Length: 106
Image (cartoon, rainbow, N blue to C red; front, side):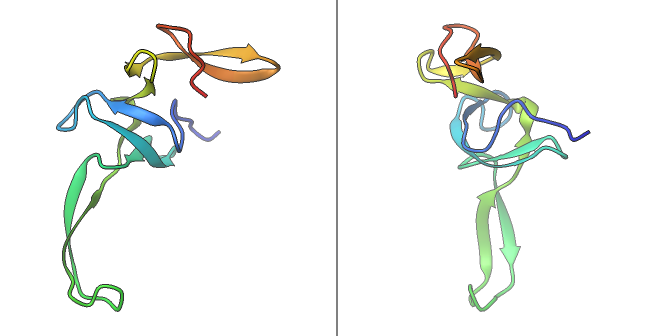
């Protein structure tokens, strides 16, 4: 059985721990087997690279690194913060719902 995450690609999330605490971002990629997600603009790291045809100069490149999925919460635009969510069936479709205000998050 493959593991699953509480967030998915394209979700807007809020970071709840670490150096980027209280920042928001969109999930670019998710890695369910590792339990990690890649969030745009969050957890930036510097990588030293050799010159390539694409980047002949080489040098130091700054890019995002994956963070633990348990360190993010789904962002609710009505509550304007990261929130826990539940599931409800609406019109024969299972949707994610904010636990605080009841807004549909899908």
